Amino acid sequence: MQIKHRSRLIATVGVLVVGLMLSACGKPKEGAGPPQAGTPEVAVVVVQPERITLTEELPGRTSPYLIAEVRPQVGGILQKRLFTEGSDVKAGDILYQIDPALFQAAYDNAKAALARAEANLPTIRLRAERYRELIPEKAVSQQEYDDVVASLKQAEADIEYWKATVESARINLGYTRVIAPISGRIGKSNVTVGALVTANQPTPLAIIQQLDPIYVDATQSSANLLQLKRNMEAGRIKAGNPDQARVKLFLEDGTPYPLVGTLKFSDVTVDPSTGSFILRMVFPNPKHVLLPGMYVRALVQEGVVDRAILAPQQGVSRDPKGIPIAMVVDSSGKVEQRTLKIDRAIGDKWLVSEGLKPGDRLIVEGLQKIKPGVTVKIAPLGTKAEKSPPKALLNPPKRKSRGEIPCPSFSSIVLFLHGSSPLS
Image (tube, rainbow, N blue to C red; front, side, top):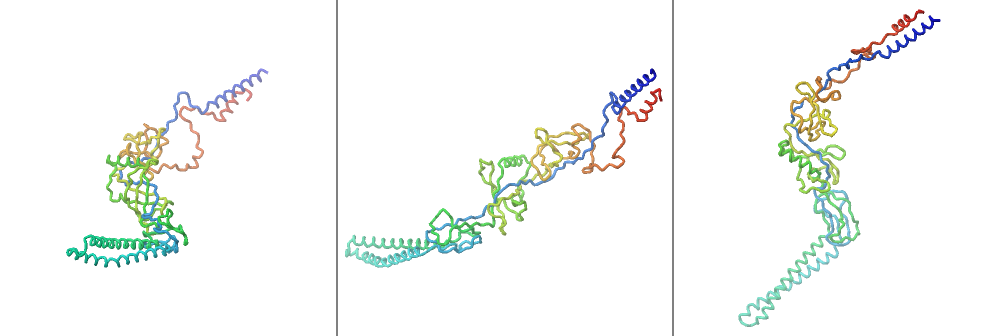
């Protein structure tokens, strides 16, 4: 009994010892430091100055080069419509015919009255001449001569009056034919044959718009204009480019317009509700691709920067306050953080006005593994893609780190238990 009790005690102690050994295996020894990592690799881009042309994309709307609202100058019944809706018309083409009967009668009446006045004039003129000859001989009184002279002047005035009346009647008769004031494309007719129209009515009969060339009115922020002027005064942007007045256009579906336009002028008034002003451009439109009211985007050239610093967008991030920052490698191979001042985006790069200088090595790959002050190793750009590990390394043997307590093998545990039992 004493032997069995002793064997059980030894077996129990052995199991406890083995458990303690298994729980401590793989743990580093007290005082052992963490495993040392290698020098992180990063890819950099060397910043070089470039000559670039600054452009700005502005939203805009098209508007006709000329527009005329056709309205009648006289009233009457509309007899004919002499154009096809949506067609091109030329200046002077007859568009509508208003009933001319009343105006023809007024013209004829004025002509008859003029003829009557002209018929009375010779008799009165001859009488005035005879009285003038008889005045020295006292054959007629001075009063009779004065009356004849007054009658002559009245007859001449009547002739001038009826001449003006005839001309007015002729003009009104001509207004019964409504003609096109400009050349362009005419829209739909707002009246039909048989309608009564009046002089200077508020509703136009039709609208004519000249579409070739055509205006594009784009809006630009006044804040951007002030920034542009400051950059020009500081010498960062140069004006005077001969192509600066040339403008490119993109249609509302994103396709580029094949013809180049010209910047004409900028408005002098800023809209207080939007803080923007109007830039007016002229584009040739021979095929009438651009229609009035169409939304477009204009690409306007602002100026030229001779030594622009462009940084890839992947190498620029922002701190918690939203300030743009970048990591560069200094001459000693350590990471240095720079605070940047960004002007605008140009393609996939940022135009940097402050924070970088020519020759700086900007880190664009490996940013997740570094921090300021860390020594890094520069690797070629685009070669940091990880390759597939070989099959032999898919399940690599576990290595002991420095200062790690080794785990006992299964055979050593069996031998230990076997040797600890006096019954074996």
